[in-house]
Image (tube, rainbow, N blue to C red; front, top):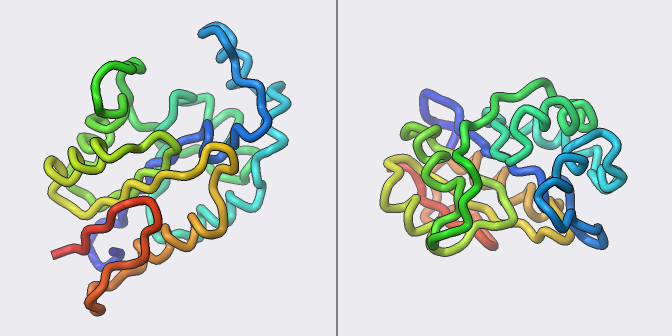
Length: 182
C-alpha cells in the first residue's frame, strides 16, 4: 500500500485499543470519563509501552481517532514516546444508527487517501459503508478491547501497509477487510 504518492493514514483509537479494558472498571456515568482521560488514571499502567516504537516504524501517518481528542497528545503520546499527532475532527458521540459515530468523519478526513482505522468497535456496517463511500484502499481493523493491540494485530497492519500489489492474494486480515489498490 505504500506505493502511492501519499503515505497511508492510520486512524488510532485509544480506549480498548491502546488502553485495554481487561479487568478495568469503566466509568459508569458520563462525568466519570473526565478523570479517565487524565494522567492520574490507574488503568494507564496497562498500556504496552512498546507500542509507541512499533507504531512509529509503520510506513504511515498516525492520526488520533479517539474521544480523547487532544488529551491523547497530552496523556497517551508521552507514555508511548510518540510526538504530538494530528487529531481527527470527530462529531459528538452518537450511539444511534448502524454506523459507528466515527465512520463518516474518518472517510471524510482520509479524503481518498489509503487508510487503516484501528478500533475495538468496528462492525460490518462500518466496513460496508467505507467500501461504498471511500475511493481508496482501506483496512478497518477491529481489536479485542480486553487485550488491546497485540503482536498479531501489528502483523496485520504491517502486511497491509507493505502489500505491493504483486501477489494474487491480498495481505492477511483476521478481522478487517483489505482492498488492494488498483
